[in-house]
Image (cartoon, rainbow, N blue to C red; front, top):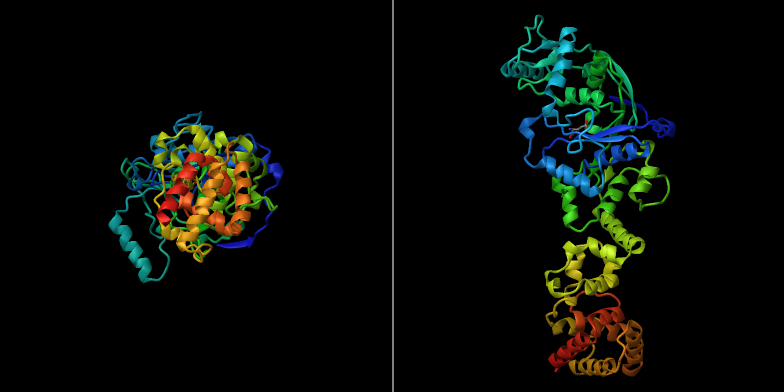
Length: 497
Ligand code: GLU
């Protein structure tokens, strides 16, 4: 197969004005992972952009690969990402059923039509015979093609016998909206199986029938189907049906960029990211931009912006590298965006599953205060678990954290204790425990102790949190409250003696 040219602008905006009918057609063989979810996102965006329809169809004709619960997982993943479908499983529609194993008679009807027209035939070959043909081809160093062994007088078809397509080997040229103009020779054409011995269709046949019956205008799927496209084109021709726009999405590459993202690279289920505290907005944003951009520097796109700006002609034709660091960065941006646009209370509602267990006795109001001083440091919502524990329970005192700090190791424990006691006396005098008053008091303490901010503030910060990170000190103290802050400083001061 060769690529003649690769024009970037091969889909004019005008062609998108007609409502697009697109589909996501996963096989329920496991979870949806990062590598294949763009085949749901892009068709969704195109359908919404053109006021068309987005269909969810389940392709379960390979019963051996069927995994229990996979369809539910696909459904919950799409719902979580906000990719609601207009037609398909669960919601129904005019062209159902939308589960292939329930559409057997549709495929058989079309296969029989091809049989009647002499464009398909009943295949009596046993699997042993096929193996012999394959071995022969290997021995003769020629590619195995079933059509070279096509029976001259095929038997009458009966149930339990596969039906094969009788192909006419020839060259094909076609246009792929991402990969450009393609050309193949006759050698890639074979008599592919349409209906298997178990009565179910192959993917090769079923998707063509379904796409036709469901009026699909754009077939958007992974590039792994590109090599089979000539066989599909032969089928479209034999069935005398128009070819939808073909859109092949390049692979998503592993973090090192060399090869396709695999489970070994940690290609997790999309829904696992939910449990890790990734926001669906960020996931959608990140994945949509993995191999697509709008031609500007913009990196944060809401769903409605994606719907408005997405275009097939800006999908990259080479693999895009999966970079988890970027996903985390984008998630952090989305956390701030939600806080800014929807308010901290709404952000709080999204965080409920991610707090430390010790929050059981605290109020929503207190947690909102904690969130409001820490949200701009979060990369994932689950960072709350590790970053906020000391707001809800007394931290374990570890004096070595103080004495080994690079800012504090030059002081004796006596000096450190004196600094803490001075701090306590000063903070105790604050009547109105507000961030501003605390900040003024801390500034006065710097003058009084002649310590540098990094020294005094590190001492106080560690003493109240024993955490590797805390938000700005005056805010941390304000949220902890006067009693808790001072009690913690006193406990540490006592231990220093
Ligand atoms: N069932 C196929 C898969 O999961 C879908 C390919 C297509 O979209 O046509 O890879």
